[in-house]
Amino acid sequence: MQREIEEYMTHLEWEEKSPATRSQYRRDIEAFFRWTPGGEVTKEQVIDYKGHLREVYQPASVNAKLAAINGFFAFLGRHDLRVKQLKIQRQAFCSRERELSKTEYLRLVRTAEARHSDRLSLMIQTICATGIRVSELHSITAEAVERGEAVIQLKGKTRVILLSGKLRKKLQRYLHRRGVKSGPAFVTRTGRPLDRSSIWRMMKSLCAEAGVESSKVFPHNLRHLFARCFYAIDRDLAKLADILGHSNINTTRIYIISSGREHRQRMDALRLVL
Image (tube, rainbow, N blue to C red; front, top):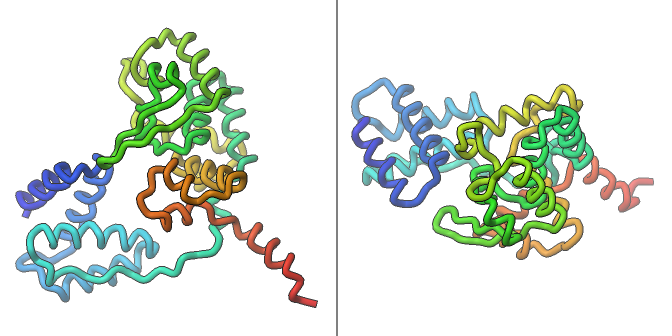
C-alpha cells in the first residue's frame, strides 16, 4: 500500500496541493492503515474508523481526516469505500478560548519589542496587517516592499496584496538595518525563509510574558483577526474574500464570526427579556 500512497502524493503535487496539505494527507492516510487489521479494506472498517475518530477528535478534525482517506480511495477507484463526513452546523460565534482579541495581539507585539526581537514583532504585524497565510510570508520580499505590494501565488491562484504605508515604512527600515536588498524579508541566520513550525514556536514563546493563552496564539489566528478588523470597517464580504484568497465566500464567513461575549451583547440589545 505504501507504493499507492506515494503515487497519490505525486498526484496531489500535480494537483498543486501545498506541501503542508500533502504532509497532512499522508499522516492521515497512514494513520488509517495503521489502525486497520490488514488485508482487504472493507466499508465496515472505514465506518468503524470514522466512529473511532469521533471518539478522539473534534468534528472538524474528523472531517479533515475523512477527506484525506476519501480522496485516496477515489484515487484508487474505490469509491465504494468512501464515507460521509459529519454534518456540522455553523456556529454563530467563536469560542472565547480560541479568539485572539486586538488587545491580546498588541500585547504579543509589545512583548516581542520588549525582548528586542524586531524580526518577530514585525513578522507578527506583517501577517496580521495583510491577512496572508503563514505559508505566504515568503512572498513579502525586499522587491515587494519596494513596490508596496506583494504577489501571492498559491494553489494555482494569483492575487496581489497591498502593503499599507505604515507597514511598508517599518519593513523598509527593518530591511535596511538587516542589509537585505533582495529576496524574502524574514529569514534564518543562514538566509533561508522561516518555516511554519519556527514561526509557530517563536509566537508561542511570547504567551506567558504577554499574558495571552497559548491556545489563541498561532499564525492563522492573526489572519482571522485581520478579517474581523477589516470587515468591521469595510463590511464588504466579497472584497474580503478576494483579499484572503478565498474561492468560496462561505469560507470567509467563518473568519468574521464574533465572540460569544459580543453575541450576548447583541442579544441583550434586542431587549426581549423583561
